Length: 106
Image (cartoon, rainbow, N blue to C red; front, side):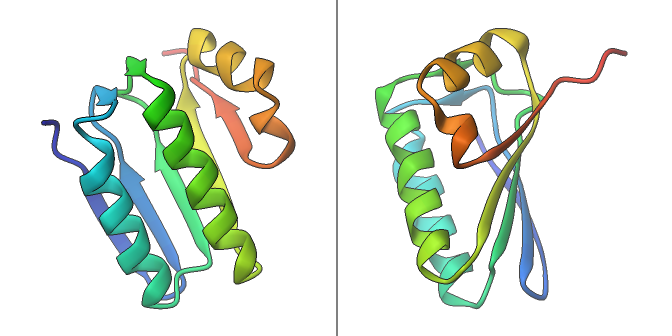
């Protein structure tokens, strides 16, 4: 299981994801997201710099996070998304709900 890093400042939180967002990692991430939203976070940014693999459970986690934040008039952002991951998320039309920023060139 890959560790995530969380930084919360008031109503904003940033989560640095690990290499995978799959069935084995999602329970930990969902629990952390639920805790953050419960503590008043309304803007959540997922840093996907290290993210290389996501399965259907990971996609479901993103949808659940969006829905939970939407209930509190919050927003979900994804930054540093690889081009392949960006294409996948856009093909599923998640870009219509979640603000997705592609990986910046080095």
